[in-house]
Every structure is written in C-alpha cells, then in structure tokens.
Image: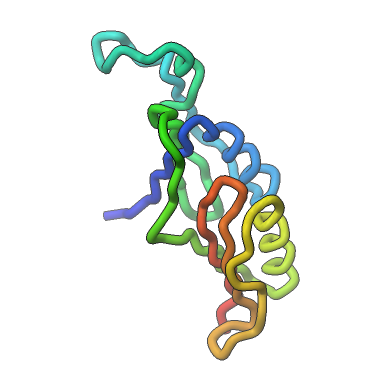
Length: 136
C-alpha cells in the first residue's frame, strides 16, 4: 500500500507544478486535461475548463504528488496537513525554505530546535503548508 497526496488547486495547477519544478526540482511525469476525457466517461465540462488540468503526476524526490485543477470553483483551502521536505543539510533547508516562502506566508521561521538542526513551517503562494526539516 502507498499513500499519496492529491492536491486540488482550483485553476492554478499548472502554475503550481511549474513553481515546484523550478524551485524544488520536481518533474511533471503525467498530464491529462479535461478536453482529453471522452464525453461518454464523465460529466459535461463547464466552458473554460477544457484546457485545465484534470490530473497530473508530479515527482518530488521519491514521492509522487497528484494534482488537479478540480472544477476550478470556490476558494482553494489546504488545511489540516503539511507536506514535509526532509532535507540533508542546513544550507539546502534554508535555500528551499526561502524559495517556497516567496510570495507565501512564513508560519515558523527556520531555526534550530531540540529535534532538528533546521526546522521551519510556511504556506507557499498557493496556500500549501510545508515543513522543512533537517532531522538530527
């Protein structure tokens, strides 16, 4: 069994995937747009969603994160969870934290703790909550 996160970006999926590619080295390994879905296999697609992302696989290190635009309605809320980056050294933790925090919101600045040489939390520009840690 494997547990994988599936994130819905309500219209900003492609932008988010490109941000993670450019800043975390993520690789986009699969993309399906709504206009690729056979009409017989799904609901009628509302106008404006044809080129939006129905499903995307994004490889981040050893983890595949699944992503979608969903139906692109309502406010995007990522609550009750965080994605964690376990980083090998302090310099890399600081670098990745700064990149993710750009246009985001730092919740706990990077610092040394009793359990990690570097630890910090933030919400990125898309509202996704991240923990960056260099465990001791």
